[in-house]
Image 1 (cartoon, rainbow, N blue to C red):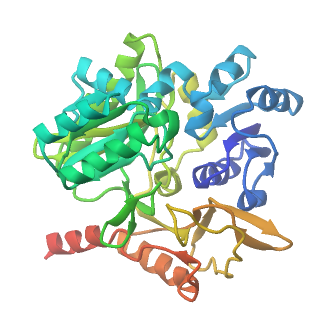
Image 2 (image 1 turned 90 degrees about the horizontal axis):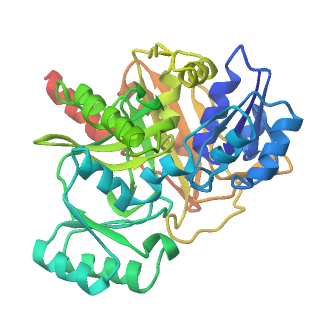
Image 3 (image 1 turned 30 degrees about the horizontal axis):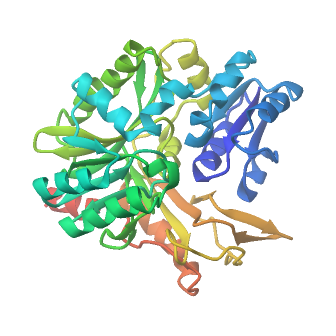
Amino acid sequence: MKILVIGRGGREHSLVQKFAESPQVSKVFAAPGNAGMEEEAECVPISETEGGQLITFAKENKVDVTFVGPENPLLAGVVDQFKEAGLLVFGPTKAAALIEGSKHFAKQIMKKYNIPTADYEAFTDAEEAKAYIQEKGAPIVVKADGLAAGKGVVVAETVDQAVEAVNEMLLDGRFGDASREIVVEEFLQGEEFSLMAFVNGEHVYPMVTAKDHKRAFEGDQGPNTGGMGAFAPAQDLPDGAYDFAVDNILQQAASALVEEDRSFTGILYAGLIQTPQGPKVIEFNARFGDPETQVVLPLLENDLVQVILDVLDQKDPQLTWKNQACAGVVVASAGYPGSYQKGIPLPAWSKEKGLFVVHAGTKKVEKSYVSDGGRVLLFGKTAGDLAAALSDVNDALRVFDETDDFFYRKDIGQSAIVSSNQNVE
């Protein structure tokens, strides 16, 4: 079979790596891909949202299945275009992907179908938003309604910070159309985790949990990013939390979208928080999370192509998972998530000890890699436990300690290791 992966980031490289393992696959294409994907795939210079060109390419190259990785092409209707062209594609339609494309829409669905989430109000008027914030107090969360590359969320610890976020989003248009409307919601206290599932209509096949680290700096300090590292499965979830989240959140959301005539096929992602009342939804995404994909897929024992074919056929793919832990740490350009330089040469690294490397923002100049994005690489490892996986990852990352051009968090997963050690004691 020939597979086309649409996208250019770390999530898509992880997908390419998994597809390339399949005995059913003869060729993987990536559009547009990145330099690191060239080891496993043929990169095609077509942008993710150029539906017409992607369809022409898929037809001319007899592509059997197309997998749409990022949110932008989903919300641009690329899946709809592929379906209209009679091509097999895995991903939600534009109507179903709105569960990620609009925070307000997602909140309305959760409210209507009793999916547990934080209390909220939506605003287009800055003064009304500020009055609501004054009434509720801080901490409080301010979110741009639309897509903002993981950066449109401000967890305000003071009323002044929340007011500033309102001004930036509604008055200054910091995120353009994405922040013409904002959602202001209750701050939830607890441990965050991610739960993704393969979905086709009301058929939901959940994956293992994962834990992402959004803040730029150690100790969960600094601005929100697209993710600085992750591990799977998430640790220390109370008994019953996983089943509750599958039944009352993922299954309920899938059924709700069918009911709303927006039936969802693809990867449904729930960003969750374990509160004293049980898991609640922070956000839904209409695709694999990044960097969670990079630590979840290495634990999947199934052939990913067969899983997708089964899900599209409404057959249970019988997911099986390694009884191991997987950890990944992101190397980012200095300055990220703000402004940063591109084209910086990357130091040579070693893939010893069973490490894998996922490329997110790299380019090849002659035979060497240079940076081409904010998040540049992810170093990962699967091992018997989280501590063993992270030990080898952090050893490999030391080559980046000698440069000021890149940074990475040295504390990914450490609180989970400490917590599990305390539980053992």
